[in-house]
Image 1 (tube, rainbow, N blue to C red):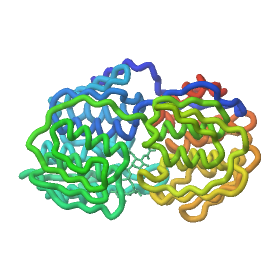
Image 2 (image 1 turned 60 degrees about the vertical axis):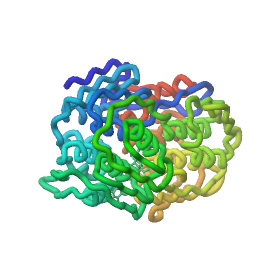
Image 3 (image 1 turned 180 degrees about the vertical axis):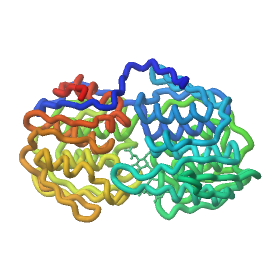
Image 4 (image 1 turned 90 degrees about the horizontal axis):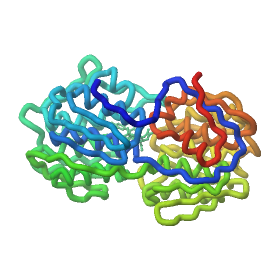
Length: 431
Ligand code: EPU
């Protein structure tokens, strides 16, 4: 393993957080680079042999896992002070093994770039995830539509296109962030034109398309739901600054709304998280926007609101759990419907342990606001569920101990330290 890591964050796998609820947040937190933008950008470096520089790269378990995948393929990866340098000239292998892919579904992002560069690829099927099935059929269909022969062999997606890929017309029946990214990355080196309809509009995909454009791809319609790609023979490496993490930003806004502020959240790209921020504002939180900073405060009990998740620019499924924590102490009954993942509710039983009154009805959660939550031991079950438990613990009376916090460390950079610096009573312990 050649991964050089001089970042200070340690990532112990069995830590717990102990949070004493009741402290208002009073201070400033800064948003890190976006995990979900960093991961496809890291994969995209495969397309252009040479050294790529990714600035503002978040120091997370997931970005380290992607670095390991790239290293396995032969790349040289150096991670230093939030700058990730990836040299993809030495990449020779086109196989992403189960041992790495099983730890992070987003490893599937190497499918398109490897197929485009080498004409063949073997990527392990990612398997299920914490809250249920997350198929990859659209990724496979997209590669087939570009002319690849795809089969599933011993748990691996095996795709071959010995004579190269050919542009295609691909209308997505529903929005998929990852499949849009994979198709786009494969199409930039395909022969002829590819038209992607109903492409994901998520800022992560827009940044990916912009980076591919910078590397020499011919892409029209960036930032819209129709992407037109004219394949080129070769791309050159580049440098990019990763956008601020919209989910981390909105999680902090939710933290200020649940615990009370004033909490200043700096380094926010509001247009990337506006639906969540406005929904939090609708609960009665005071939101003040000044340049790239949002100050959030709350003086009254939150009001109940209804939430329905949707693809960007709608309310992100990745914010559903955190807003559920806020609504669990609201005055009135709220309903959260997740239209993206119908069973993404593993946080519900844990919030209920803290005293929340939540009932599931299909892909909706009915949240009857309670006066107060009470601290107790709970278990993190996935990334956003963990964040929801942290937020709930900030207002729960007494002490909450959240175990299995490695889920949180996958996608939030030092969330506990950032909140502690803003006044939260939060400590990390070894279990
Ligand atoms: N889907 C299929 N077939 C596919 C691909 C997706 O049926 O081949 C379905 C999914 O099961 C889901 C819907 O399509 O119902 C949308 O999934 P999408 O492909 O958009 O999700 P993803 O690319 O796998 C990314 C984020 C997730 C986020 C979703 C939705 C990354 C690395 N992951 O996943 O982020 O929830 O988009 O916005 O970008 C997180 O950060 O906590 C996280 C889970």
